[in-house]
Length: 165
Length: 182
Image (cartoon, rainbow over all chains, first blue to last red):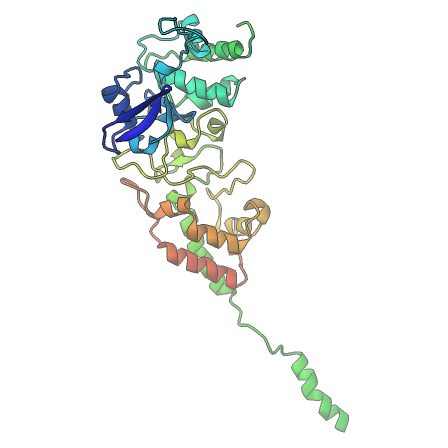
């Protein structure tokens, strides 16, 4: 039995310790927002955060995250403080920027793109284009939405600093 | 004549040190050839690149996905993909504890270094993060990331020279005065 915290909820999962975290998220916990792309940490579609750091969940055995905090795309939006169960969630600034810039085309890679962008902005709140390339070149997009991704990153960075886009 | 006869052996002794050691320079240079061969093996060289991008494979091509030292500063550390141990399936990323490049201010470049260049670099503490030769030997002997070079996981050739042989060569090189090849 593996114990972990997923999006703020404690979970106990009956799984072999070498099962990839991605399998646990999708098949055991029903969190299908995180996608399977390559299975060898080459494409970034499966990116989640473990204790605040971006990790490729397709090559991360769930035994490695025992007792740790996992954040997936489903946990990124937050309910407002004091909200009820039925209160609408407030999108993360990166998610809102993705909508505002109409970033996704097919959408398959976008959960990973967004999770990597959140990690980027946590490390560097004001990234240049070169910084964005350094952080996000490991997240592949077969639709080629890279120009819109770059614009959305700048928009989200401005929003997080309280600036108008 | 008597004083001269008495002084002659003293003068001879002063010119011939009682603690004279055999010249081990050639032995040291030969030992360093082993050090150079290991350090420039792809398993070692690939994470000691001349530029900011780590290298991959035996041919030392730049790391895929535009990975550089800049990536780490932008939320993409090596540990995003590289665990503290090798993946068990083919083509998964290799891994070892504290997988990382040398820092940008102590780059410890191996790629392209001639034996003499590498030798002079290793003897300069400003280029080894303050490590002297004894600490370099300890690093090579004990560091778990260095260990990975001999157990690199499926699909990768390990360093062909055994680790104890490398350590012995480093000790021989240091004991002989750490001579640099010509």
